[in-house]
Length: 220
View 1 (spheres, rainbow, N blue to C red):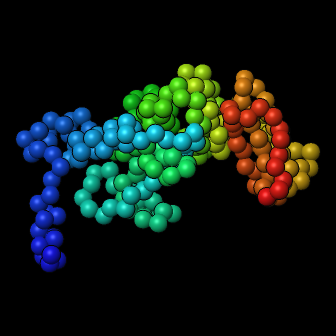
View 2 (view 1 turned 180 degrees about the vertical axis):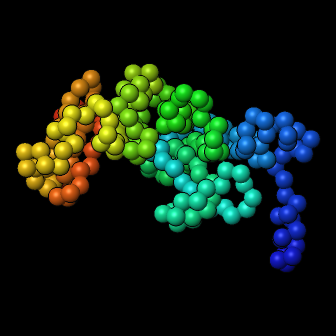
View 3 (view 1 turned 135 degrees about the vertical axis):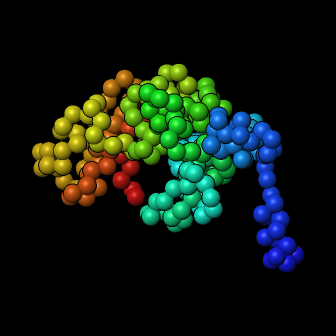
């Protein structure tokens, strides 16, 4: 088709009813596409059987059109877009579930954003004994314990060093003159935490409810 024809079709394309749009907008800012989006996510959750290892992370989907919750993140490949928090299969990279971040009001009051998104995303795999890999924006000690006890899911993830559960020795770069590539371990309540000195001036902290020892693979 011609470019003019394509632009005309795009300008006329709608995914909701004009008659009900305002009522739905009171519930969610995602109203113009929420009905189609919910059908997509339901099919992803029910028609696909994921492998044993899943990952939760965020993606900025490039978009420069009119949108009240469009974000600007200069470090991303697409600097403008809509942020989607999603759970994917490690093996096939297939998206199992996803939630859009619609700005203020997306997360219920007095509930940590990480807990809200993670618990919503993992609802379809609850009790399946799968493992979830997460980045430090989502990982916390209470959430890791909750997923193990209430959802029967293990977690591996990087975690910020400012967590109150970590002693100073665990997050101090200069503790006992630690050498680069050395590791310290913590064990408590079915969890393992690791403080890895990746560089002379950099510590990486991780937490796991899947492992129970201090074994290190030094082959790579």
